[in-house]
Length: 104
Image (tube, rainbow, N blue to C red):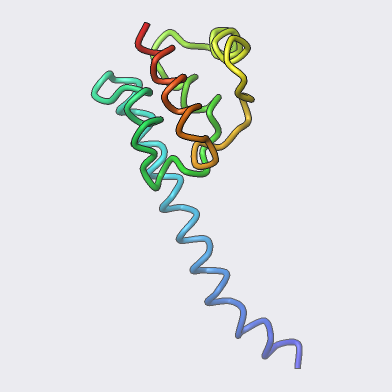
């Protein structure tokens, strides 16, 4: 009986792994575009594409060229936003404030 349950779950697990891999690859491409300067972090924050919805704000900001964890923390301390906050959960006010701070 246990073998039947394992076989029935296998396709679901494989689909979940494929989906997770798809999201990881899309995020890596997004981070590379931000790092290369073809896309700004402010644009990503304002638009919030599907790849970035569950990405943490700290990961996105640190993917910019010459931005490390210390610089990210300094920016986020000046704004009432946590480093671990997911981009999809930001309010419109937080998005605009972050984009304005990054544009300075």
